Length: 331
Image 1 (tube, rainbow, N blue to C red):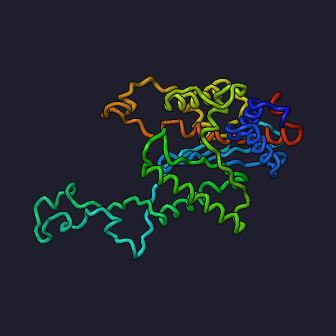
Image 2: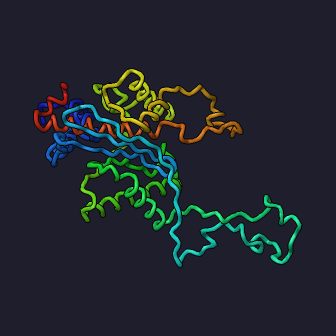
Image 3: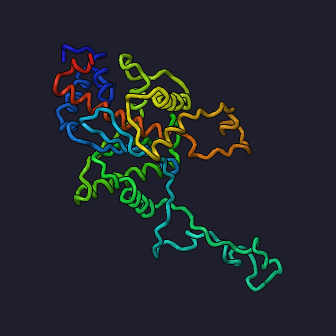
């Protein structure tokens, strides 16, 4: 340990996707612990599923890694907007699950009174709309269906899940929507662990902090792991611009699959027009702001960079285990 100074140990941790805080003994112990665990065998083909967490704005990509072809292949790259369909049970009254649009007495009307306007189809009661609920039973059903019918169909060998925080941007309070996403994250882990234990799925799960992914790609690795202070929106723009530059310049970081993956890549190559804060919904509400959420690329960017960063970290750990820490300092 004495042969490495604090700056060098931080750089090694940075290039292996580890936390860079702490004293020399803490950093060295953290690095040593990570390098002595069972390493990821990169000599065998891997299918890596990277998930950027969210309910309305989940995104995922699948990366195929072939030891004979060092560049990962982006096999799938998609947005998801999940709907939480309630699980109806005797303990949940139907009045909670359905909008009260079909019974006139619940709207304060006399059910016996009939008006000539009742024949107007535009004024007829609508079919009851099922409310979205976010109770554990409904979210568990959604998470299980998502995994079995979508995410696990390609039989990933490794699943990388973005670690959620309880507070965003230093907010004083914990928002209800944040708790919902955290609950979904926990349920996904529980379902995956159950499928592992029962032998249904034989892959492994890794958790990645988003605070380590962005700096890994946006910083010169010799500078350390702290980004200069800037608004969060600017940070997101830089990550999107990075992927756009890769695609425009014929990147060697990754290869693109066909079909939907090519369609997503084309969305990066069409630069959006500059819009004011008002049109972006950052100022006063604008009636002209009709851009759908799916046109945003930040979630797709995050899941891609997360998966690619994990691959680079595992490669660096493998190199350090075989050749020593100096091989990480001087790649």
